[in-house]
Length: 78
Length: 78
DNA sequence: GGCCCTATATATAACAG
DNA sequence: TCTGTTATATATAGGGC
Image (cartoon, rainbow over all chains, first blue to last red; front, side):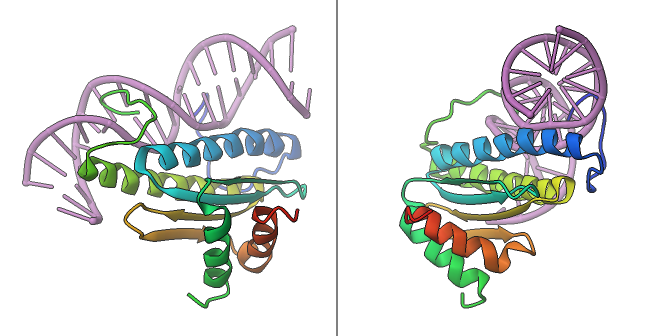
């Protein structure tokens, strides 16, 4: 989606990787907010950059419920 | 992004809402996978449909780490 | 419910400052 | 780095099966 087509593989140039991370992170968070409103869904999203920085979005009703489910799912208990 | 422009507000027609949910859920999960590969990031994502159905994506390294952070973040402890 | 199709809205890669 | 621009790749609305 841009001036050129890119392959979905690790971006080796650290600077480009950071720029792409920042833009796509914003894009995903925007999409998460949209599906929440459009479809009456609940979304929780956490993204860790390789730099160690973290970003997250929790739709209001998920604040308490989703993390608990999430925790259990990821541990293989659900 | 389609034949017509839509406002970002709840889709009242339940059938349309479900179709849009399904399509956008797939889109967000695809984006989550892409940023994981492109940017060496880690993503964890949980989506609840209003129907109660749930969908999730955890990039490999986040399986254990992110849910714990997520849990703490959402509880306001981080 | 899911999958295909196509026109169109959007996201974003590459670049400039 | 961050912000803005713009051409182009993608996502998706609406429709049919």
